[in-house]
Length: 41
Image (tube, rainbow, N blue to C red; front, side, top):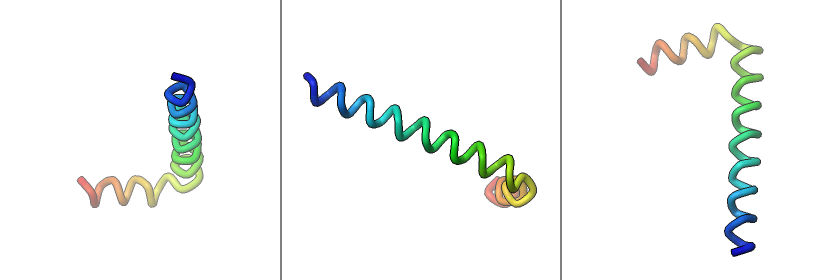
């Protein structure tokens, strides 16, 4: 059971880290992000 909590905590930390990184990247380079978004769409 403790292992499950460890995995849950690690996953949550990874998600938060990825979210903050993507938010920073999108705020830093908004134009390329929007261009890639349009291309992908």
